[in-house]
Length: 119
Image (cartoon, rainbow, N blue to C red; front, side, top):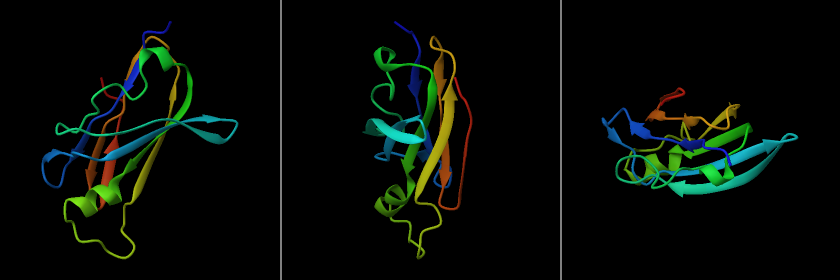
């Protein structure tokens, strides 16, 4: 069984705090099709309560995390423009090491975001 796993952390850089209660969906991409693997929300620390892709489900391949930024911004009272500049934020990435920890954080504001492979 692989020892790798996938986690995330979402920080609201405009407010300088974790992005709590933000919905995240994980898809595996196979033959150009998205297959949902998991869906969860961030906790008060901007993290999920468990790995998004735990050890028992971990395997190499192409994945996509979709962060529901628009719904989060609506919920915290950021006035929306029509349409909102950022709504769903998809991050497509590859997992090539079955025994590695993949950490894909999101730094979010109403008008921009960034990500990287963390530790």
